[in-house]
Every structure is written in structure tokens, then in C-alpha cells.
Length: 375
View 1 (spheres, helix red, strand yellow):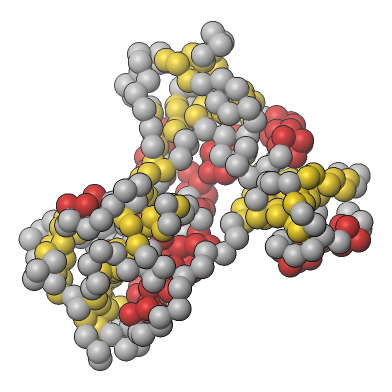
View 2 (cartoon, rainbow, N blue to C red):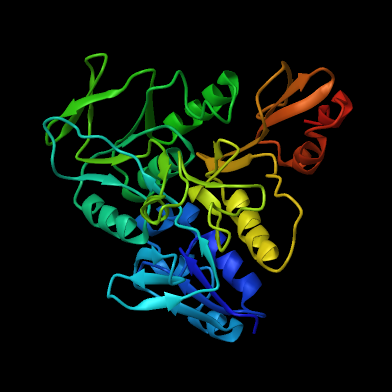
């Protein structure tokens, strides 16, 4: 063994880092939850009735076999001088190298007139509490029309068979991932499945049964859940005196301002950019482990991609939506290719799995429309 590794956070980045290091290092993973590490992006399955264990990344025996020591207590502070992580129960976990993968927290705001049955969805316990509330509810509203909000709205609609609304203050749903025409196609599918979408408006106030919108209308909302984005969880790093801004600031080797502390995943800020996708968390977890083991090559984030299936429609968003739009339509499918200076910058696919592999390969390369004519 080379020495001691402590990893704070049991998300994808943390588990990836710990599993990549455990062969050569005495590795401890500090979870901060009573559950084993789970796939957070599937958390709406628990609201629909799945057991928490079905979302676990690995059984307990897997961590034992890898030699990863699991601690369910929360990390309360970092003693940089003493090279240890202080837990809430006062115990200390020593480290030679520390990896912070604290993830992010769901953002919300107060709703005047309403105190109960308001949720945010980030942890397993959040999901279990929301499921309990929905069992006796006659309506549900999601504030926020992003990926997680739409998946949650559709799941509740299908599982609880109650009126479901989505409130999106942007001009249309998934405005970061989709062009407007593709978003409209998805919205129509959602509304056929029982999810009513209100775009271009914001939540203003609420009473016990209704949510009132900025345009004066109201929607039934016995239970409300915020899904309006996340903020990097940087508190423990900030309190330890590490450099932070929007997130925990790292260099292209994922090192913080302390050479013995790295950070990875949603908590990180790199070159002014923060991250919120599982693909980047996995990459960073692997890269942090590689850096600790001597890798000196810079981390270069992959082009973002998002996959979603809602209301029977498969949606994929690859790259960025910049440049000229080129649209290819089938009977129930649509591919929008964004081209700038002859190069494919991004692609949005609606019910077009047949060209997914080709689309992934096309981003960042010269535009060849024959690739998409088969849609």
C-alpha cells in the first residue's frame, strides 16, 4: 500500500475514484448517508415504488472485495494541517491524499402562503419522503422543466394517476439541451401522457392546494417539488480554506489549492465551468485516481450529452446548439444538426436511435448530411 486515501462523497465520482485507487492505497469512502452509493439520476424510480436497494451501484460485498472501507457518517470538516477528515461524531479519518466529491445541492426558494408539502429531490431520503406525500395527494406540480423535472413529472403521472403540471420560466422545456421545435414535439408527447406544461411563466405564490403563476393563472398543487437546478456543494472545502468560487476551484489535474487535496464531479469548478452530468463525474473520478497515481496529462471534459425517455419519446442531445440548423424528419422522428463553419457542433435526436452511433461520431467533425438521410 502506498498510503491512505480518503474520499468524501458516495456519488459516481467518489465511487469511481475509490474503486480505482483501492488496489494500491488504503482507501476510505465517506458516504454521509445511511444508504450504499446509488444512481442519483434514477431516483424518480423510488418515488414510483422501487426499493432503494434497486438503485445501489454495488452490493456491500463488492466494496469489501475491493478493500474499500465505508463510513456512513458525514464529514464535518477537514484538518489540513493534521491531514485528516473530521466526522460529525468527532472521529478522524487520516489521509495522505484526499478527494472531495461532495456533489451538489438542489436549489429552491420560499413560496409565499405555503409551508407544507414542498420538496426538493436530491437524496434517497428526499425520494422516500416525496413518495410518502404523494400517496395521499390529488395533484402534483414540478417547478422546473429540465431533465430531472420532466422525468419526475412523467413518472408521477404514470405511477400515481393524478394531475401533474410542470412550470418552466424559460421559453420552452429543456432549453439548454433542445432547439424549440424539438422541445415542442416532446411537450406534445408529455401532454398526451397527462403532464401539463406551462412555459414562459414562473411560480409566484401558493396556498394549500394551488400554485399561482406569474400570469395570474393557477394549477392544482397538493404537492410541489422544486427542480430548478443545483449548486455546487463546496462548504467543507470553503471552511477548510481551499479556493472556491461557484464550486471548488481545481486545475486541469483536478488538484485544489492544496496539493494533497483533489476534487471531482458536480462540486468542481474548472476554468470557470461547473458540471452536472454523470459522464463528467465518472471521468473526473477516474482522472483524480490517475493523477494520484502519477498521471500528469490534463483533464479535458468530454462534449456534454443528455439522454431522456419521456412519454414514449427517446431524446438525445449531443454537443452544443450553435450554428446553422439542418433538420431531417421521419414519420415520428426528427434530427436537428447544428453546423458552424462546416463542422458539426451539436445534434438533437427525437426517436432516432438508429443514427445515435453515427451522431456521436459526427460531433466535432465535418458535416456530411448523408449520415442523417436514413431518418
